[in-house]
Amino acid sequence: MASIDLATWATILGTWILVVGTLVFAYWQLRQAQRLHSSTTLLDLRERFYSPRMRQARRDLSTWLLKETRGEEPEDWEVGIFFELMGALTRTKVLEKRMVWSAFATWITAYHYCMTHPVDLLAKWRGESNDPLIFAEFEWLATTMLDMDRRLAPGAHDPRTSASDAQYVLESESHLRLPPEPLDTRA
Image (tube, rainbow, N blue to C red; front, top):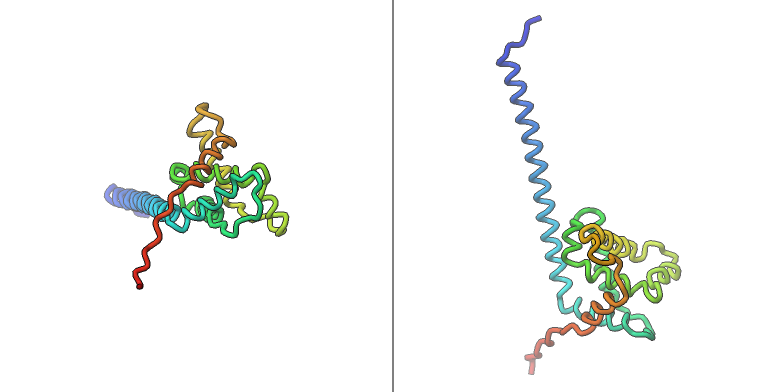
């Protein structure tokens, strides 16, 4: 059996270092691409959040949620559906939690609080429809955002959304300015 000389061992070792280095670099590139995709998606969601249609939906829902006697439920639940989508994207790691927290946590926790206090509308809808998954991703997202508050700002404040905090956010939402209607130039 012939012995392998030093040059052969150096070639084998160099090849393995190159393979491992290439894999590490490819992983790093993939991770950077994922982060870029997450931030791009979040910016798109932010643009949608500020669109005229969503501003109207936010204004309508916040106004209804702030009423002491709420009356008939609004038909447009686009705000909850928006946060449900964001929860699904965050849970599946399409969006990074920290980015979502930074961009949307205030609204997520405020709307969630008002949708569960004084009456838990989420539990009510789940019971009425016999569907335990109604707004489950939104609920998970709100809990995650509160956990991040606790971790990222320890001791700074009570991480639970208070009634006054939620009311303040929704008061602001209920006074959102809507863009002017386009003029009808057909005459």
